[in-house]
Length: 472
Length: 94
Image (cartoon, rainbow over all chains, first blue to last red; front, side, top):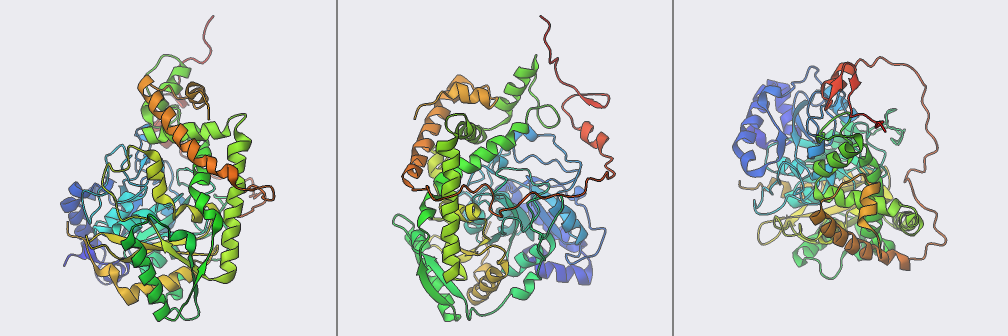
């Protein structure tokens, strides 16, 4: 068996004994063998792997990075033509922290353009494919991150999550993805999409690996005024083998008509596993979360249109050839942005424009408050919420590209966590008869990542779904 | 829902091709009719959420720190002249 199939924890242990060179070589070999089929990496070059200069908890082990996280000296493009040639002169805080912990930055991963999408099909570098079925999407927008980990092309990856962009691909690829509480991880150096939603988080093979990465990347950062000034616990201490004393809620709005019956069954079976492990299960209600997608496609696109105003071809990235300055702006943006980016910029511009601001943007912000209050009420009754990640298993490439709204609705179960800012993890809870992975979601109150780690580890160790590997 | 796609594109600094305009107009119409559902949600009592952490202003000390990145920044500029970003002439001659 190749070292590439090790978990992060196992890779760190091996590197401590024998050094990291063999691990890096094995992983590089694996990427060369399979990435032609998967297309998880935008940039990967064994000669460029920056080996660790310091020993630390990650002991020289490689970690791969979504292409919207600034990495000093590496082209960082958000998988968009408009940022081709953009080489940041600084590291995002999470990258600096990984390097300090001894990690080797291994490569940059494919994504939906500017993280706009649920399938990794809007990348200017072509789609990433699902390692479990190459005709299907890996989910998005962190599709490269999820597929690389599932295909043993990475021990762990960083992604970002604005409306489900870590959790949906983690579920579709059968791995673990954590969106931390808003403010838990610094956003400094994460190229902004929806600034009041965005969070960086780990995509890993196991729950323990997720805790290992969180121990490194979480914490206050004076360069991100929205990062929370709270101490970071040792998340590995939260991992437990039982669920005694935990109250877990099943929100009735998350088990709806029209959802895939195998997905629903797998999540309901997980609730039974939790009962067996000692948890108390009860039904709860989050009545306003049905409006999550509608709120998100007002408020998040408004933030996106404003954040993407800076791409004008002047200081970095792509510039269209043109005579005067006005044409330079208009043409650079027309040629540089893909269709989904334009759709969101236009929509966001519209909801913020004079005469529509109150009816759309302000209304969306108010309904966002009602959704937050739903979560506050639910977390007075229970410690965790257990839901599906997606109403369906991974869909086929091209299946949802013609109708944007259908694509947006893939995130119907993940968006609410971003609207409320609560932490949420996707982890494997079974497979369909056709052999496609199914994911479940655990949500907790703000800054209660430890409760998620406790429950997720107990379930994972009981069911051992993570031991199944795709044949590529 | 009525809106002028050209006017929004102008505000967003996008010069859309004719075939893009029609497709994007239809998409926006369909998304905006989906979000109409919010009109039925009573929000008289709700304060708007702009931020989940309810932060007050956050300040740090205003100190000069070394930041020797000028060459790294300019190296990747689409066009430069000396230590400046170069753009087409801004003020047209009458």
